[in-house]
Length: 557
Image 1: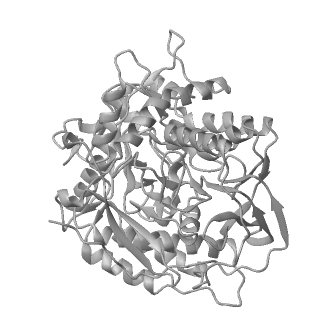
Image 2: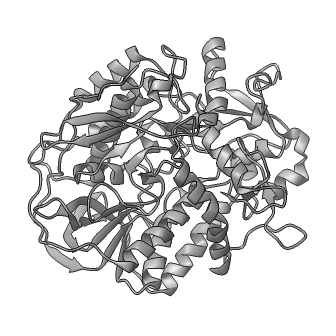
Image 3: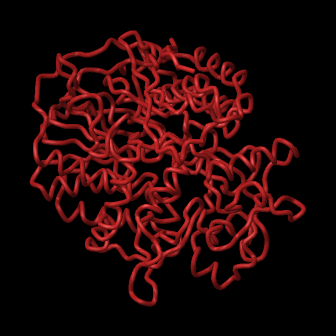
C-alpha cells in the first residue's frame, strides 16, 4: 500500500500580536532555554569566541533537566558495546529512528559524559573509581551513569550553570521568547523577547542575531498531569512552526509508567518514580499483589516505557482501577535511602513509605519524542534557526525514547551545533514584518485544552476521541484584539498549537507504534513506517505530509 500525502486544515496562530519593540540588541547567537542542551550550547559557543545571549523563561537552570532522576546512558561498561546500545535504541524507537543519528549519539555519548566530569560533575562512582552503572527499561546492559543517587539532572544542571556563569555569558532570565525575526527571504535573523513582570510582558526587545538556537524542551504541560515542570508548554515548538520550520513526530508523546498517583484530580507537575527503581529490582503489581508485567514482554518490568505504560493503561481500562502499585520493599530500606533519597523523600511527603509498602503509580505525560525537524547538528528547515534537545526531532528517539538517552542527546547535539556555528555563522539580513497574526489563544482556554488532551490523546487513543479533540480545539476562544498578550496567553497559544499538531498526527496515523497507541488500530502497519511532517501556511493552516525513513530490516515491526 502506498501512502498519499496527508493534508489537514486545522488552524493555529501564525504570529503573535505584539506591540512595537522598545529596544534593540545585537549578538552573534541567541540560545533559548537553560536545560542541559541550552547551557552546553552557550558554554561551547562562548569557548569558541562567539558572543552569546541566553534567554530563559524562568530562572537560570529551570527546566526538565534538573528534574531528571535516572541518569545518562553511555557505553562505559566492560560487557557493553556500541552496537548493543544502538540496537536497544532502535528497538525502543519502534521503526522510526534514524540509525545514522543513533550511531552518532552512541559514539559521542561517552565523550559528553567525560566533558561533564571535566567541568566538575560529581558522578556516583564504583569502587574502582569509574562511574557506577545501572540499568533501566529497554537496556540490555548496565549503562546508566547517575549522580546523587537519583539527582542526576540536578548535578548536570549545577555543573553547566556554574560553567556558564564562569564564562560571563549574557543571560536574560525571566524573559519570554516570542517570535523569530525573519528576513524577506525567510531566514531567521533574530528573536523578539520580552521581560516577564508578574505575568505581564514588558520591555519588548529585538535581539538581532546571526543564529537562534532553540533549546526550550518539550510540551508535557499540554496534558492535565505530567512529570514535566510547569514551563514545558511547547513555546519553542510553536515559535519554530510560526517561523516556517517543519515539525515532525509530534504525536509520539512518551508517558512514563510510574508517576506517583495522588488522586484522580491531580493537575500540573507530578512526582516521578524513576525507572531506575525497577532497574534495581522493584516490580509493578495490581491490588492483589499479582505482577502485571510478567508475560506482557520478555523484559517484564524492564520493558520499554511505551510497552509498560500501555500495559498499565489497558489493565486500568479493563478493571476500572485508577492506579497500579510499585513494590520496592524487597530492595531494603538502607539501599533505597542511599540509592533513591529524593524519591523516598517525595513519596513520604505524599504520605507513602516506599521502604515499607507498595506505592500507587500510573502513567503520565513525560517526554516528547517529536519536535522541530532537525539533524544532530541542530539544523532545521529554516536558515538561521537551530534546535537541540527535547524541542528537536532528530530521529534519535523515533516512536519511543529509550530511557536516559535524552540528556546525552542534548549534550551531543549542543556540542555539534556549537561547533557548526563556531566555524561559520549564517549570513545576516534585515528584519521585515512577517505573517499577519491569525490571533493568539485566550488563557481561559487552557483548562479545556489540557482536559481534552488528557481524555482523548492519552496513552490509549481512538479515532472517535481524536475527532472530538479536534472539535474542542477548533472552538477555543481567541484573545480579544485590544487585550495585550501576556504569559498566560502566550502559553495557552503554544499549548493549543501543540495539541492541534498532536491531534492531527494521531488521527492521521491509523496504526499503533511506540508511544502512539490506537485502540481502534492496534496493529503496527509497515506502510506507516514514515514520519508525519507538518508546516504552517500564511493563513495558519497546517499541511501534513509523509516522509519515508530507512530503518534496518531487523527492527521493522
